[in-house]
Length: 247
Image 1 (cartoon, rainbow, N blue to C red):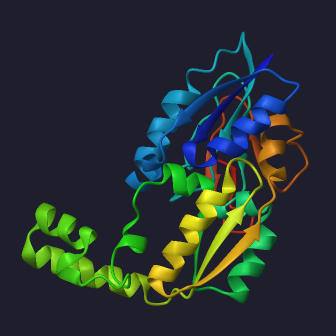
Image 2 (image 1 turned 135 degrees about the horizontal axis):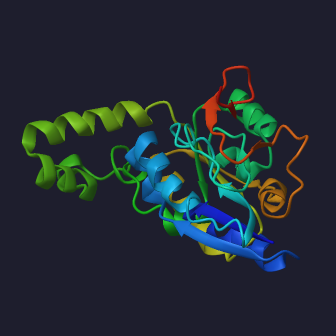
């Protein structure tokens, strides 16, 4: 039986490397990173459409290359085969290899902006990095000019001020190097972005083991994954496990 992998393109290089090396047959559905930005309900609806395409005669399970991401996993229902989801708040923990490592990094340096090769290649222009604090005067900044054209003077000024507040507490840009893909150019670009913002830059070794296990298993008896039996759905949990079975 094959595995159906439904994945965010932020994990493009890491997960496709795992698929290429896998002994199993994996069918892949890759969705755009922008789905994450459209809110949990929109993301969940799009994922459910893909999940429902699983064929029980072909697929032994559906695995999700997604973290909780704005509650985008909540309410997802397994089709006629088990559904496997990662117990992670966001992709940062998945790329670092564990929630525990992310928690340690957050405690040590909470004002950290994170990047990876997937975010560099697939994430698109990010207003956090192109907006206030880059040394470009507001009225000449491409991000402000984009806001001005789209929203007008008053709204653009308000949004610019909000961006200033959101980036004020950042002091470090951490790049997660998983060792997969052409990292040198992405690292150099991340260093340049950190310099533009006046943030300290740190290259951090990632660990693709969690993503490799997502592709290959095993998934049972591990706090890294939730296995949803056919017909059941995912609910939020507030006991540290993040997600569990509804009902």
